[in-house]
Figure 1 (cartoon, one colour):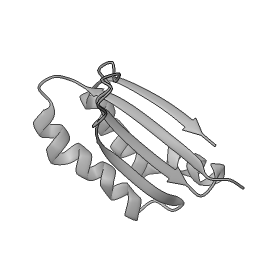
Figure 2 (spheres, rainbow, N blue to C red; figure 1 turned 90 degrees about the horizontal axis):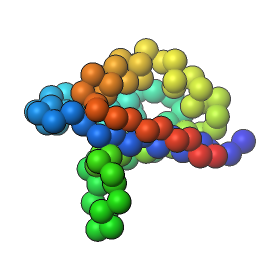
Figure 3 (cartoon, one colour; figure 1 turned 90 degrees about the vertical axis):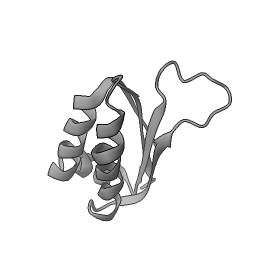
Figure 4 (cartoon, rainbow, N blue to C red; figure 1 turned 45 degrees about the horizontal axis):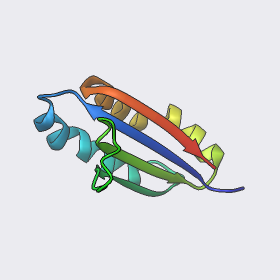
Length: 99
């Protein structure tokens, strides 16, 4: 089976920077060491010089061993807890899976 790349782009709600930096981003990074099937997890603010983010200035990219690992992650309570934190602080979220 081939790897699956899960791409999440977020536009944070204005005024939520302290919460995002203090608890949401650390929780996101923490998924890498705790959820089986994650090969790599990269997250951060856009550094693109193109300026084409359209407000989606934060990205999270998770690479999974395969589609089954991605599917298990989607219902894993550790992911759903972090997902709830993201949703509570986001104005807009776009998710695309490749692979």
